[in-house]
Length: 378
Ligand SMILES: [Zn+2]
Image (cartoon, rainbow, N blue to C red):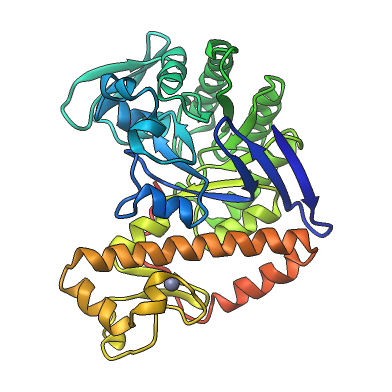
């Protein structure tokens, strides 16, 4: 199911192949986020043709809208969305505890109020696995508890214990006759020993892969790196490792060097819609007046449709005039930038030059200063 192809001699980076029921996916891989079954402004075919063989959708959101009856009619989420790649569905644990109007742990699951119409629902670990089996997701994620930054160790430990019990219930609830994969989510907040405990406990449950959750939620970069390092070091080496909701190009390349294989993040598409472009020399704000007369493309090293055909001046004009096309062009560019980075990362690991590539990439990215203010990751 997962095969490691090449290990980098100077770091923990590796390339691999992950086989799901619908796709063979080269890793490291970046999964664009189509929360409701669509990556905003991009068609499923464009996404696939750009090389994205797997995308992420969200159980919490799809359960509320359009609802299970609709998707069930189509037989699978792939049929419904007409995306021919693989789909990983997140359980929605994060959204329940961060987005719904209230959420509490009760009745062996999570009780929450819909952020759309105020209706009350209960998700149990078993129900969440069954919902994703109804989607026929390539990769199923279990319900977990997200306790957020700044909580006491006592609360973090209590939440972790629930998450670990739920992980076991999720594995047991999965229909073994079906070939959907199930990953478990290693948590532990920002406490070294809880991160260790979580990874060790879950490793015993023999999942198809392991996610690292609860990071990139406002902590500093060093803390994120430390927590990620602990989780990865205690997870099985021969299973894919997926860092949830991360992140910036810098976060991704650093996490690859620590041994992470899979990523998802809203940044390339969300930032495009607020006028921000990722480039080989840093991040660019198309709204900035310095671009008003510029004939050059967003990134002269980029081969995407936006960069091959349009100037910064045109993009700025279209964006400032609130033309939908500008958001679409910036999304096309940002996704191409992420995909190109991932392809280069894979190539560099395979030919033994990953550390050099990483150092050059990070240095070059500092030429244009500063990230946009709004870089919230979920
Ligand atoms: Zn481009």
